[in-house]
Length: 465
Image 1 (cartoon, one colour):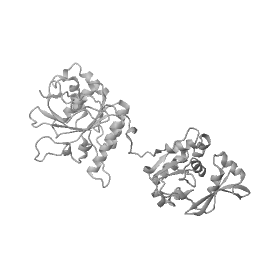
Image 2 (tube, rainbow, N blue to C red):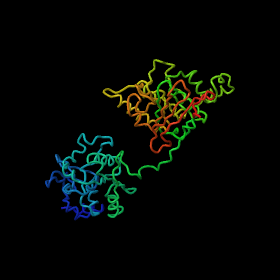
Image 3 (cartoon, one colour):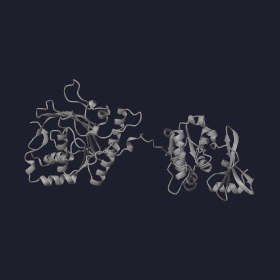
Image 4 (cartoon, helix red, strand yellow):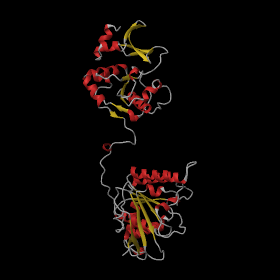
């Protein structure tokens, strides 16, 4: 039997006494005070009781009582079940007309990072494991505070986020009982009906994605190549070709074009000495002058100054005992981006950095992991990242290599946004092929090839006339 003061307390919370009677609530005397007792049953048997003082917030349970979900008899069949963080929140949901509602026996002090599958914080859930497996969906109506969010996260992890929804309370309310008192049962109905699916990382609706902006790029500086590919921020380009074909000359043309547009560049150059070879090669391309004219060119110092200002070099030539692995390279590239605003990042060549594979990691797995790091870097820092990667030596193969010929892994072909190949069929002839062999869908360009030549008067790669 429920004492009159407890009936009045329940009424103030919007819970009629006849509902409380039906649910087995009673008034009991303990330790010289009247407590409102809430029975917990499991498989029809009374296994515990929660006691509540209404004069102040004080909760107790039967010593040695079993923890389980309150009102667990409604967990049967399929359909949807609502889970609250307190019995009175569950009763508030019942007042709004929902019968299939349960409450956890206690909240959680666990942080959101705690593993719900270890420890005893969620042991009560496993008391109903088989019955819960058959439920189609759950509405998690936990409290709108940090412990409540942690509880919802733990419940979703156990029950499966694909089956769980969450509710968003009106301002000033942190649970369903407060919503009932403040706004009435119709608002409780609206919240339950409007519960949203728990987000699942990696699984989205189209509406979750921002509208895609048009992908624009910057010209490469090789006019015949520009319709086929661009320098696109956030992209990953693989550039390949057999050794001593002139890939560095192509890169110098691209770098000079960026510097001429005041676009900062960072290049990791391990096969070419920074000074004087790399510096002078880029300076000649920047000035558009021949090798013979360069020493007396009137703007040579101006070109050096532009290179000093806009071009940053990653190198271990000043300390050859220093190994540069992928992590070190990305740290240095990050510094170049943040400190100097570099937008084109070049690693030339891939095989010259120190490669540290994990134990039992194959070369293919390592390269796949490395490329993921490189692509993540390009997107995070909004830079165009180019890697020069050598193919394996030709063995009876005629013609230019492809991305699948790059040593180590097919990931070079599969994961590139752009794939570019430079090839000279006859190294004694000043004529080469630039082949765009990969353009990711949505990026400007097309797979095709152009004939090129090295213009000795401008020190740049140009289209072959």
